Amino acid sequence: MASTLGQTWRHREIIVVDDGSTDETLAVVRQFESNEVRVVTQPNQGATAARNKAFSLSRGDYIQWLDADDLLSPDKVAHQMQAAGQTGDGRTLFSSPWASFRYRPAKGKFIPTPLWCDLAPTEWLTRKWEGNLHMQTRHLAR
Image (tube, rainbow, N blue to C red; front, top):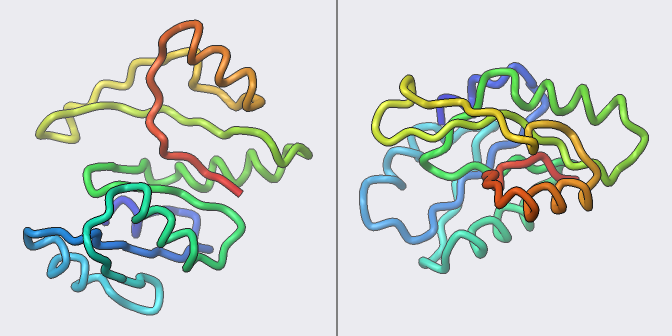
């Protein structure tokens, strides 16, 4: 939640969907509830249903999916919004570096791949398939 609230892009709407968690997740996210952070709950239906719920409630033009174990660099959304403003093609897929880590986010390893650039969707898929590359589904979508 801290990496979401710490974004330099200030035009945001944060929707947290608790998908039937059985731990203390709901109590933790309720602490952040405000005019800027809306928390909704639903019975456990999985990640797709949670994303669809958030999407149905959203009012913005772009979506940044984020799961509980994800982190964003502070200027990630600002960089992508700047790139979106510079392209005339509404079908551009904006990508960014990502790192995996197990227990300590500071130990994340950022290893560049051919997907670390802004591409037309067909080119992105071609590179992903040909190189058997992995990219998280954390994207800015219209």
